[in-house]
Image (cartoon, rainbow, N blue to C red; front, side, top):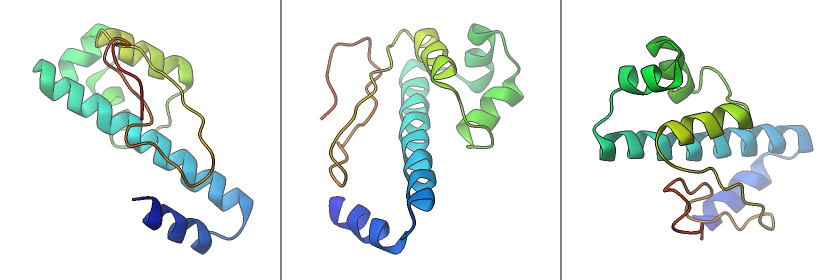
Amino acid sequence: MNDILDQLDELIADEASQVEYKHELAISAFTNEIARLMTAQGLSQSDLARRLGVSRAHVSQLLQHRSSPTLRTMVQIANALGCDVVPNVAPCGSWPARPFVADGGKTVAG
């Protein structure tokens, strides 16, 4: 996977584009993990929305990347799933397999 990321980094020449790309990659990793946890816990978007006190449409927008969650929102979502958000910083080009671990802090990314 790092080879693909390196190739994409080369294609995205300017720093602003790289930041946007990496932002989207991090949000995607987070929302994919949330979707996985929801499936594992047998939760629907409506269930998660009730736990968060928001509309199902809002949860749908977050999971479909139509809105970008703040770190606070990410923590609220993880908390609603009985998990933690563990931000990770790594040298460029060395994305861990799971940049965000959300399983109650029992494991560490990597």
